[in-house]
Length: 517
Image (cartoon, rainbow, N blue to C red):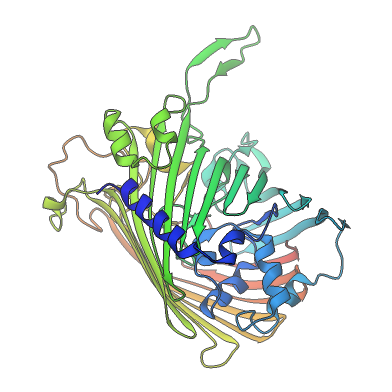
């Protein structure tokens, strides 16, 4: 049976579950509320709440409506983390706030941080400043805007993106040999919710899957992109998400030259690049969520009508179109195995030939993720997480560069390179509500054969390239920090990073102070 058939059956099952249930009529309690951005610090508390009993899809399908948090604050039930949601949301002030009796409101807050990264040879200073506002019109239409301008200095003169401390942003400029460079990040969208349907249109980031640090298909480590996103909940046990978005190719990928002015300026088109993705989540009970997802990347042409059908199996659609696009499939699960513990996993299939499994076939491109997260061990102040992620050679790459599974220079999925794996142990200790001690240690491995998303599959698919083939490197990375939240959003953080080999400063101290939304 095709995926569309399974989707239809699951939707019918969800409708049956919803029959006679009043709660099924308000499965999106947000109305027109905006969402929390996927990098909000409040997700730390959300993850703890899910372990303790909150709905599992709050973990696996982000962003999440702001009202979800407000509802948890109001209920103050067993999974509200002993008042942590309430304390986090109770800011003493907002730059401006306006509310009406008809559920309309407007709220605006600033954002600013100053950070220094230091080692024996250099220092990199990063400044961030911006603003966020969000609100609702009569509880039906929500809106959200978040702009953060970033400035980086210390590794100049800046002439290429590889000089950035981290290259996971959109447009970066100027790169013309200056002492500093800048880039900005913006999320801005409208959202409408009615009963079981939520529609979001604008520029946003998305994270699908159970991973805490990263995910295989869609992860929030890549820049935001323009998109239309629909979530349907015909019943409490089923949620279906449809997404269509416009992506950016890498900065060195240009389209056709249109003309050149008399002053020598050349007008060049930008190559078109699109994504469509589906996600179906099924929650048979409060302790288990199972999901299947698929996504297709295509470029060098406009919208493809076959991909606009939300119930069309994307593999069949691109196969019918001549096998010229890049389709990825994934499945994941998350299970509450104890009152304070979650176990989760995911599988990504970029390309697969079953008869070649276990034979180092270059055309088999798979990804794996497994994790365990426990809270309140051995006291209510300690959280422990273990996560393993692995990508086979050439994952996210494609024959045609435009079809790589990327947005700008960042992979849309996992934050490790192809032909790599990482196992990480993360520990968090919170002796008081305002003070957190964090430590994460990871063992990393990488092979250079098929080890970059920018590499294209060789034409001779008969050759074998195994996991960690090529020039192999192994290293251990460590990150530990102390974080003090003097007031909600006002944070001072001091930490140490060692062994981050794939950054320009693999070993450094860092210091950050600011107000973070």
